[in-house]
Image 1 (tube, rainbow, N blue to C red):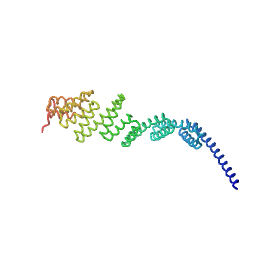
Image 2 (image 1 turned 30 degrees about the vertical axis):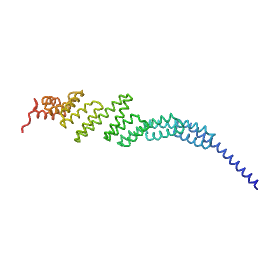
Image 3 (image 1 turned 120 degrees about the horizontal axis):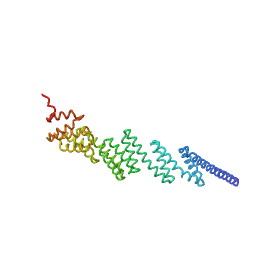
Image 4 (image 1 turned 135 degrees about the vertical axis):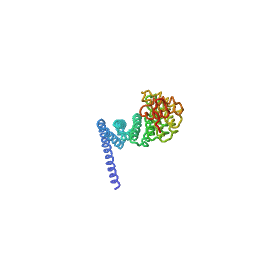
Length: 331
């Protein structure tokens, strides 16, 4: 009885071993066929090719060591395919999908030890984050735009474009301290790279931001704050419009000497026709009148007599009894 049982067990064991061997052979063939399917799809359908190569690796792993060649070959091909998808999606401006593809490409390059793909996909990821941020900024979602710029800068802290766009988001939020800090950082990078064109662009952005901030402050009757913004604007280069605003605010504060100096500097920078210079002459004349320099004030009110200053100039010249001015109306 014991002998029959032993024979039975031996037969069962032999059947199991034969079945396992047959399964291994079939599975390796399936793995190879799946790999070859991926090779066929590479040029026509890269996404389907990725799926085939990934499945071939899973099947080859189930087979064991004898299918290591399939895994090795698929592992060499996959990172490049993932990267091709990144490039295609980025070129089509499908940035949300491109971001997912970037992460997949980086993961595949790490898994299959392809440092070149990892570096290139990571670079593009920074670009993609920046473009997503830009789209969010255009949609007036500045907080999330800034988060995406920060993600780009986490990847590459020296990515000047992301720093600049982050500064622009702070400008849209009217966050002067954060804008100043960020634009100065971006400007430092641009100058370090000897990028004169970008440096000039950033300086103009900074001048405009602080001058516009000053105009808002002046309208809100915050003259001292406005002067501070205007002086900060001048840190980024001389600007005739900034000098005009300085003259205007100083006149409103009755700081006529400072107003006259600012108006004169703006006038020197204005290279346009007489009509373009009118606003500077007007502020200069107001300052001179405030200082008691009547003759100079009368002369410059006359120089400023262009739209939209004509009526104001007439009134000032009448009040100051300038030569040739209309007589004051009788009471």
